Amino acid sequence: MKSVLLATTLLTFGLGSAAMATTKAEVLTFYADIAQATYSDSLAAARTLQTAVQTLVSDPTGANLQAARAAWIAAREPYQQSEVFRFGNPIVDDWEGKVNSWPLDEGLIDYVDAAYGGPTDENDFAVLNVIANPSFALSGKTIDAELITPELLADTLHEADGIEANVATGYHAIEFLLWGQDLNGHGTGAGERPATDFARNETCTGGNCDRRAQYLMAATELLVRDLEWMAAQWRDGGQGRNAVTADEDAGIVAMLTGMGSLSYGELAGERMRLGLMLNDPEEEQDCFSDNTHNSHYFDGLGIRNVYLGSYTRPDGSVLSGASLADLVTETDPALDAEMQARLSQTMQALGAIKSEAEAGFAYDQMLERGNEKGEKLIMGGVNALVDQAKTIERVVTVLGLDNIAFEGSESLDNPDAVFQ
Image (cartoon, rainbow, N blue to C red; front, side, top):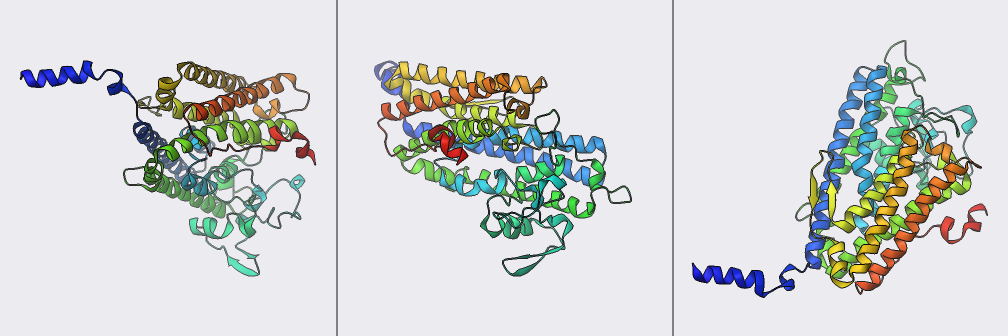
């Protein structure tokens, strides 16, 4: 008994700070744990959405349409927190286009307003409307689309002819089917698709209601399948977990690349600054539902999750563990304090956008040319994210890492090119 006590005493007091030091291996293991939890929660939310869609299709009432829309918005909360895993992890980046591609030429999928126009030089399929056409020509072949299946969407229609705007799958295709086009411009209101667009009798609006229901069911089934696959990649033995934990320095690089690229080029640049420069409500990420404020907010939260090693699940439970913050604190406590302050400033700025939108000042209104309040809100987020990315670069240096390049954006790096 004495020897056990002595050994414990030596472990507790003799080893000192060395026993408490956080290792890169511990940080990477918990990073993979957060990824697994985030994708698992995204999957659970997608299954709830699928159930709501099935109810809508079976009984297309206004109440059931609203319930499906609410399930879609709820499903975005965990998924957007996963986007920080995209950059730096090829397994995620190669897959992400299946579930979150944006923007999209929605005329590929269903009817659109006449002002939308027709086929363009860039996209012959901009108004294909597969819901109204049980067969169509693609690359010289006649495609049988009599049944709209997950396989038709994923293997044939998605990015048809290699055109990225031909988005046939994922959250935004589902969003369009639930809301329809937002024709309000910079005015208030989201898309207003009626529940009768899914009716199977004489009350059907929009035509082809049975095929529209098929498409919506197929798209939600495919979303669930894709998220099942990704959630599995972060479990023990999964490809994503194995890849990020195989080499400690490379794994930490992946973490910081995800944080920096999402902060700078993707969120501050492509999703926020670019839309403000163009004053275009079509540049909203969730443009049919007017949910962009939430998507930006939860993107920012995902970045903070990775640095702090903490993730709050939809049920309110919190996962916490070894983090980048621990590694930085051990090397440069002042830099850790700066990084955490930057993260807080970003969340405050994104939170201000979210609060204003929830109070009735929609994100597409913020984008309107000459709207000083909207520009101030959006640029507050942009500037905070850019400052955050600069501090992430300093973290890279302090941790002695190299070979890191963050995603850029012409809107930030070469603004004149946006209008050329």
